[in-house]
Length: 488
Image (cartoon, rainbow, N blue to C red):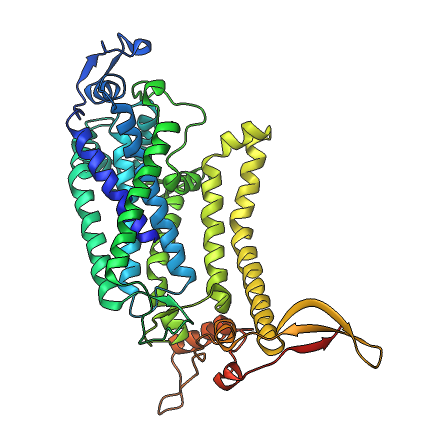
């Protein structure tokens, strides 16, 4: 459903964007504003910002249309992120769906790029501040930094940024999104839906709604998504460009922050100390290079994870049944660690606002976030993994002994026992009948030697499966049970 919501949100984005194109002027030529928005009358601004004000205050329904376009893009990005998390924790990225995972990661990257280019088009003060940060990051790139900045901005900053961003936002990136969604749909039809175990589902069996029912539900979901987005746009203000004023490279607004899906990049810039060093006759700024490197490695690791897990586990089988997150504790721990890492960076982007609202020191809060960025993912991994193992043990106890009923009876000998209610065979298979793949074993060549890569694979495989609770045998899961009692 999350994938459908992202597609339907994109349709709303596309429709509202096409309508906005008829009223928006991307020119960066400076004009004197003489429109109906009195607070900015007589102010020098670009035609892009003036046309944005005209859309908001002179075109009937224009402000609602801008709000719909902005909110639908936020909903689309959120749906893609949640869909990515669902794919990860449910194991829906495993073979043969690794390409689907790569497509979703690419869709997320393209969506973030579309959001960044779109937020720059109004040429207001907030977007101008973000472009100033982007220019600084580009210029910090060794050797080619100045060239990259000139290429993107069409000359010295601020240049004519809309000449580059406008075609990207209205043509290139939307086409890339359409291609990505179509490719994801084709792979979905080819591989079939990945579904939870139980209920007659098996590796070669798909249980679900027929095409007619699915189509009816999809149409209803589309109108529901469209209605909710319109309601949000009508009641919740987002990006009030008129209050920000025109872009000014020399000005910045206190409390300004990027869109939520780009906040982790800004947070990484804020958390990195302002270190720099001189090497090869050049000044290298760690404060700008390190955040870009870390965020790039994070996204690359996200894209490569299905292949890394397949190599570590040695599992090359096709999987069409989803896993419960508790049944793969190490993967769930890795996912939680990644969420904590992302969350700390995300919180750092709003550090000044958080410090102001809670009346705490900005410096102290940043030091705490820097420590949490290192300790938090490790703690999150360990805690999530132990919770999953505990839940596995509880499920195993339910399968073997039944569910606790809370009813305590007295025996003839004077003791007390609690009555346990046995679960049926289908519930037992759901709780403790998950798939299990043995860890990779060490194989020596004809000379009795092993390669370093193989030893590393075996060690990582052992760590991946460490403390994991093995599933029960099929005979144990299929055996009928009656109510049982256990001494308390």
